Amino acid sequence: MGYFRLIDTPSVLKELDEWLRRRLRMCLLKQWKRPKTRRRNLVALGIPEEWACNISGSRKGYWRLSLTPQMNKALGLAYWREQGLVSLVETYQSHRQPA
Image (cartoon, rainbow, N blue to C red):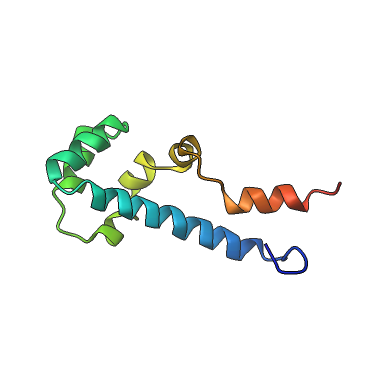
């Protein structure tokens, strides 16, 4: 959070948090190598079949696909909290509270 004291830049932490979640979404997409696996996993995460087909059959790169609304819905904040990912912004806010 800072070397000697708490930094006062929540916007930087927010951007870093967003980038980290996008990077994790990209890694999951990369892990699901085959289109059939992507479609099956996205449907299991609650995405409609049509959206899952659009994502799984796309020729766009992993980084580009990780920013789509479908991926944001499937792997949103709730999913990452469930997986145990700690939000940098929330941690910052909890440390900023006066004791």
